[in-house]
Image 1 (tube, rainbow, N blue to C red):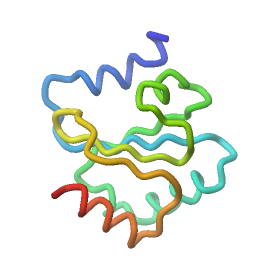
Image 2: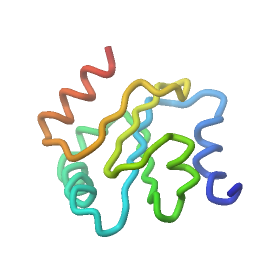
Image 3: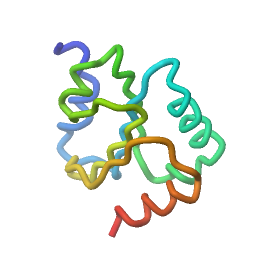
Length: 106
């Protein structure tokens, strides 16, 4: 368990994060996960200013458990003090993603 969590925990427990973070929980073979990944790759401005981490919940079930994630895709937004601001489960359009990120920053 320590080995699987060490990278993410190190990031989360850092004294001062540089920016808000988006943690994207997914599974291989998950079509909505692949579509979300494609959306983010084709629209890099959506994640500009964020630290983005990807977690395969099949390989890192303990990390999914820590964040209480049971469905994919799930995106968890953390503030610069690593507190959860909001989360979104399921696929979003570009417009929905922009609105969610804008709304959760208020």
